[in-house]
Image (cartoon, rainbow over all chains, first blue to last red; front, side, top):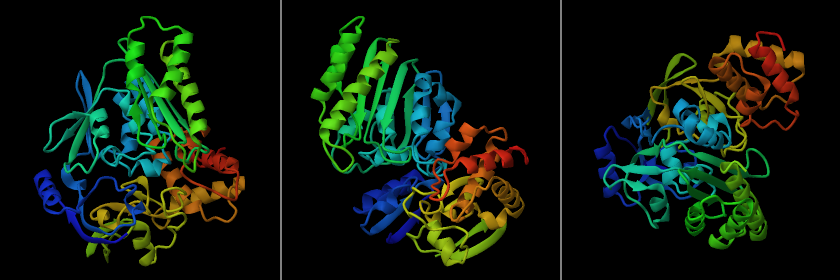
Length: 265
Length: 151
């Protein structure tokens, strides 16, 4: 990887200014995937020294600095309590411990990686992103935005409202990327269903979520119909890992299983 | 650009290129126990310890190591001796290419969890690929090492 200039910044202001000054500037979070790019980098801005590597808990939420590693998230006691531990479990399935010690939550979010096993479980929680300059926005809104986002993510916050949740990664081997991944949650009677590695970026199945929320006690048959509706609602595709038809079958099966699990059926 | 960091408890100042990985950087400076395998975050053979935590040297930029503590197997001779002994007793190595990375992860695991069980060892070593063994003997060796010589 060719880097022209490496900037080790000591304030957010300095980093932000560099980012605005140089069109081609790249922010360095964990750097886990940065070497996979083939383009030379003119300006690399390292966020390591900005103190964004702490996790704090309030009564309502868990606030995770953008430079917190996936491993530190996975092993955090508060995060282990979220959704019965489903987020910690999801993180523990990403490559190995050594990789998760390097990859950060900030890089995982800002990279908007289509293969991400981080974004899908986060989408079914109430997650807000906090930027240095822009306003706070929801993860779902951020992911739906196109184009380059020229701001610095400082932290994410996750609402601690108790919920039931499930995450399923389907891959050929433990270390492999997901063929598809699915997350489901139930918070105070409200459903969230997310599908990632479709093979494109993770999305919420919003119309199915709204439909399910109108049904007071969904039967097993309704939950099976929900699985079918998700397949019709979101776009799945083919790539070298799997064909669209196979992904459809997987999504239908695991959405239904997830919904049954969170409803205790 | 010169960077100064602690390598195996010794302060060193070496020249690093802005986009150079820690793996290429260490090997260029003749620290060749750190192996180069996939060079893409997948195989685990380039594992080193950064501030006592395992990281993939192919994934970390050398420039980021300023002021950090890096350990390779050369710096943990006593512990590596114990791990080698356990591997020998359990017949856990063949070609040995993956051993330095696995040894460092096992050392880190023992520091984190001195009562690690087989399932925890398997999970901790998931990022290490070994094309010779079936991992079973390595887990037995890890149990022996963590258990202080008893498998």
